[in-house]
Amino acid sequence: MTVYASYGEDILIKRLQQGDNNAFTEIYNRFWKLLFAIAFKHMESKEAAEEIVQEIFMRLWDRRNELDIKALGPYLATACKYAVFKQIAKDKLRREKISGHVSGLAPSDNELESLIHARFLEQILSTAIDALPTQCKIVYRLSEEEDLKIPEIADRLQISSNTARNHLARARQIIRSTLREAGASILLF
Image (cartoon, rainbow, N blue to C red; front, side, top):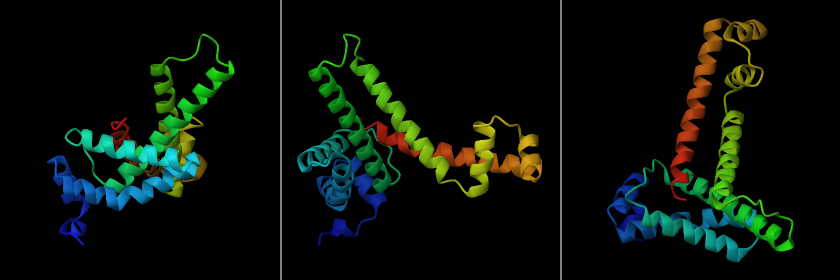
């Protein structure tokens, strides 16, 4: 066991940003199996999953100075999911082009990238909303999905306007934080 195995993530991240190969190796050893499991679950191909994981680690090393990583596990898992979705979309487009189902008006690479990015963010938002505390989730959905105002929400739930306002503020704060954390991994790609 090397000394790096005893380092916390914050130290490994700092050393990675300094170009420390041993820190990178430790990160790779800690997270390779997790990322492979995520990729394999969606790709159902050992080779495709390995390729995605290798690409994630190559980009992590290449962009180590530019990245602002708070927690390696969530960061790398989100990067892996994004890479999987991106690969699936590319494979689907390639199959459609080969089979002749895509007209000359096929989306450009930039449009495809934007579509993948939008779907990914939509999934993150949905997951963040589902993970909210129950009362925050109810207030958020009433506000955003039913377009109710604070007094209407308070009346419907039989709570004070201040309580409804606080639940909505907390929900938005949690969602913003979740999106911000996920946004960092999108920089990998």
